Amino acid sequence: MERAWWRASWRGCGDSHSCSAVYPICNQTAVTLQSPSDAWTAGNYTLALTVNGTPEQCTIDVPDPPAASGVQGACGLGSNITLALVSVESCPPVVCNGNACKGMSCTPILGHFQMTLVVQDVPTHLGLNLALNGKQLMSETIAPKSTTTEPNGGGCGTCTLGSATVSVTGG
Image (cartoon, rainbow, N blue to C red; front, side, top):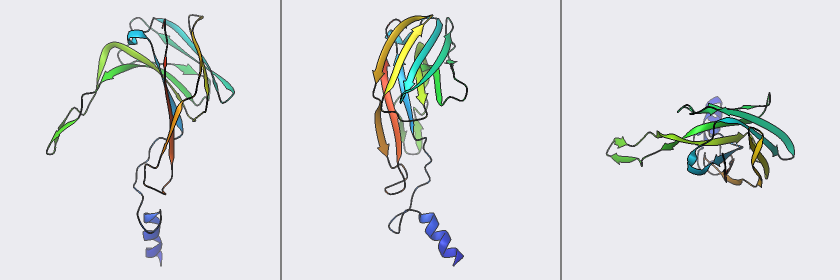
């Protein structure tokens, strides 16, 4: 009897198929803030945002020049939000010949950066207000695009992710 339970739980999604063991990151939204030429002026950036009606704030100090590894911002204590300045990367297409593949890694493009905001939620609207040294650069309310998939197969649970890209002038 115990053996039959193990087999049924291993299938997990009914008798017709089994679920795969993929554990994706779900229920989060990634917003990319892009400046012209992927360049960011050195200084203190403040991002005031509203997530489903709840106000939040993050800051990030961008040095001149930014480190190739990027810069981590600071958000409120216990916040479910992260803000970072990350390198833009060049990722060649993956080319395989038999079992040997090339192009499996990306390379940072020197001097090119984007700000990334990650919210551990999939809000319908985000209010974004970005300032540099107290001077407002942008103020926008966006509706991130959300996508729901079943990464472990049909009937094995859903995963929803949100995404958006916002242009910032004067950054």
